[in-house]
Length: 449
View 1: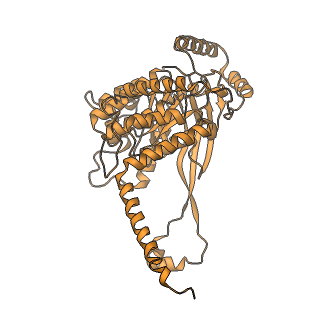
View 2: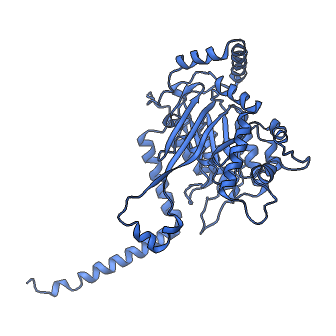
View 3: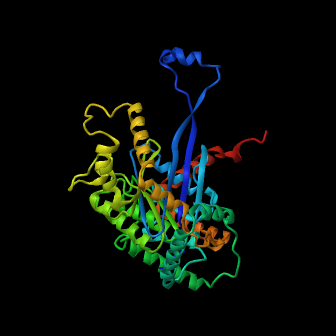
C-alpha cells in the first residue's frame, strides 16, 4: 500500500457558537405565554458548543476523542472536516504549519459519519469499488521506502527547533508560511482502461483483506427490511470506502457505536493498521473497552465544550492521579474518567444540575491549562510537521463521463435487485393502463359533437 506524506492538523483557541431561541421564563410558559409572544420579536441567545479548544492530531497515531453526550465531539470533527457552516467559528487551524480552511481540509480528509449511508442493494465489494472509481486516490503519494527518510527529516527538524529560540522561530514561520492552497483540476492523458480495472481490483482486494470482509464481499448491504451483512461488517465497509481513497487524514464519528465488543475491537485494530501506514487517524469513541484503550495513542477529552485533557495515553492515568482521582489497577481508565472525574458516581438519584456540570468543567479546564502537559501540547502545536503540501495531494473525483457511466450501471442493478420497486412499478403500470383504457373506452361509437 502506498504511503502518503504525513499531515498534522493543529488547532488553537478553536471556538464554535450557534444562535438558539431564548427560553421562555416560568411566568410566560404555557399556552398563554405563547399567545403573548405572537407578533413580538423573537430573541436569540448565543450557545457555546466549543470553548477555546487547543490540540493537534499527529500522523501515524490514533487519536481518540472522548466525552459525554453533548460535549462537542462531533462538532469538533465537523469543524476540522469542513462540514459546519451554520454557526460562528473562531480560532486558528493549521495543516503542517499552514493556515487551512474547512474547504481545503475537506479535500485532504476522509470522513466516516456515525450513520452509514450505503445503497442497500449493493454488495460489499461493489460499494468499495464504487468509492475507488468515483473518488480515485490522490496523484501524489510517497513510495514505501521513503517512510524512513520522512521520519529522519522530522527528527532533524525537531532537533533544529529545540536549539533555536521558540518565540522568534514561530514568528518567522508564521510569516513565511502561505495559506493551504485549494485543490486544482489535474489534467492529462487517461491511462488505459485495462490498467485502471487492474488497479481498481487490487485496491478493492487489499481493502477487503485489511478490514476482514472476505466472507461477506459478495453479500448485499441490506437495510431494516432486508437484513444481509451484520452491523460490524456494515461499519467496516463504510470505513473501507473512505480508507480505500487513501486520504492522508481519516476522521471517524463513533465507528464502534452499536457494535459488540469483539466487532468494536476489530474496527480499532484496523484503524491502528491504517495509522501505521503514516496517516492521521482521529475517531470519536463511546466509552472504549480496556482492550480498545490500549490501542489508542493520544486522547482528547471534552466536557461541556471545554478541553479537559489532550495528550498521550501513557500519561493519562498519571494526570488523573495528580488531579486527585487515581485509577485502580484493574479499572478501565475510560470508565474511570466518566464515573469519577467528569461525573460523581455517588450521585444515584440524579446526574446533578447543569450549573454543577458547568462548574466542574470549568475547574477541570483550569486544572488542565495550569498543568505541564498543557504546556507540552502547546509546544507540539507551535512546532508542527513542516513537510511540504502539494496540490497533487488533494483528493480527486473522476471525470463526468465516468461518473455517468458507472452511476447508470448502479441504477440498473438497483432496479433489478430491488424487488419492491419492481412490484410497485408493475402495479403502477397496470393501474395507469387501466385508467387510460377506461378513458378512451368505446370512443369510436361516440359522436364528434
